[in-house]
Image (cartoon, rainbow, N blue to C red):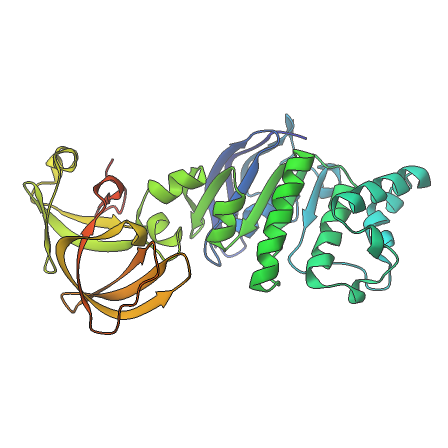
Length: 355
């Protein structure tokens, strides 16, 4: 496998539209990197630049120590798995998986050995004589992955490979991709708009918005310590509850409630006394130990926990996630508080986290 380095990568299309701005990351050998963000954020464009399907406007792409910025796609030793599988309908599964090796005119015995090894990994040995139309969506996606595996590339690229599958199948395919990564110990870059996929699959996440990298880090870092309000609200489902207010001494004050800060938060926010900030609290860190008036509007029991939607002071809509089955009804009153160890504060003007 290989290390991959993207150094100040930018993409500008004809007409001056810039899709990617100053993208920088060093990917370790065998690391699983997930690029996540909303549609149009530049994540697929970045992946396609690594694949060579899009020209790099400026910056450098280094794969395994070699400058690949202007190297043709066929010479980069990468394999890409697409959203739509891109299988040949007239070929058998065996022929689809062997296709790239056949084009290279590899020895037939080597081709057979590689295809059978990939089929073993992906549990496709009984499907090799079938045509793609005879397979389920999940099986076809496994064939697409198998076609990449047989090439034994330095880098695997996945462009939203699960977006065409239903929710149950996406879950099982996520687990298969995780197992595949462990078996191959391969360097992988994976693009998705689904933050659940990002949190469950990644060694590190690259969160993007409007062509800019917002934060790079381990999943737990983006979840518990988001760099800005965009990451805070994009990562996590339901998203983080956000409250605008002002720091007044040891208090966070807004039109909805006044919250007394602990000593640690008071010290952290001393330079913001008299200034406006944003307080962020994830739904599972809302507690029923406080004095903030909350009126229930909806109660969603999910088995192991409950999402309780409602309003604070009949104005601000928030979501609480309680760790048991709850039976709240519309109009029920609760007093809320916050888990003080899990509160996040952001500069209102810059939207950046206050550390």
